[in-house]
Amino acid sequence: MQPQKNKRILLKISGEMLSGTQDFGLEPDALEIYAKKIKTVYDKGYQIGIVIGGGNIFRGMSVAAKGMDRVAGDYLGMLATIMNSVALQSALEKLGCNTRVMSAITITQLAEPYIRRKAARHLDKGRIVIMAGGTGNPYFTTDTAAVLRGIEINADIIMKGTKVDGVYDKDPVKFPDAKRYEELTYKEVINNELKVMDLTAITLCQENNFPILVFNLKHENSINNALESRKYATIIN
Image 1 (spheres, helix red, strand yellow):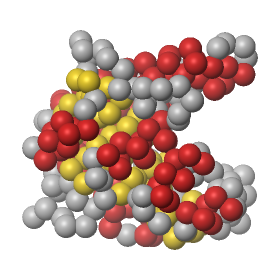
Image 2 (spheres, rainbow, N blue to C red; image 1 turned 60 degrees about the vertical axis):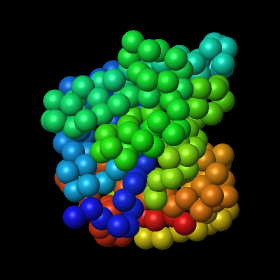
Image 3 (spheres, rainbow, N blue to C red; image 1 turned 30 degrees about the vertical axis):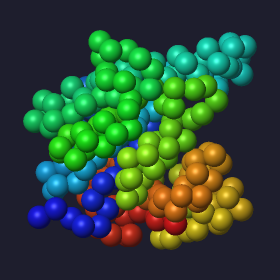
């Protein structure tokens, strides 16, 4: 039976998650682990769009700080997201998932051009759509790209996979007494400067009433658990 609530989700994965135990690059074992988590939800009938960052390969802002042109750096970062998307596609298809990679940057040998209506049709047909290349423009993060794509495909929620099980008032790794929030408003996130997403992404969610679910992607059965219980995630709406 296909679930009625949160039937269509946009999953945002940071590129660093795909490097696994390595400091950078792609680790096949990590790709397989996350692909299996995605398949668990896919098998339940959810329509899944995915946006992956490129920080495991290239980060435009950090190299810009060291002297490289910011625009050139951001475009290289977009290419990194395409590499990650094709790698995840391969891992998902090994598990029998029907997938499409769509890119905001034209690279037809690897991905279809991103067209909103076509992406929605792929989702309606039960295909996982991995949306690469960011927004296709410099100065926008993959968080902003994920929110934009989620709104465009009429997703019910954006799920941001992180290394912690929700949003805390301070870094839970450094501070054992950090408090986890089960629910927040967009205004609270902005006013308290909680590092959930960049300000552009949060504002875009607020203006479009697009809820954000922050959860620990590393936990076993993490995506499914986050969808079913606030014990495993923080909801922002």
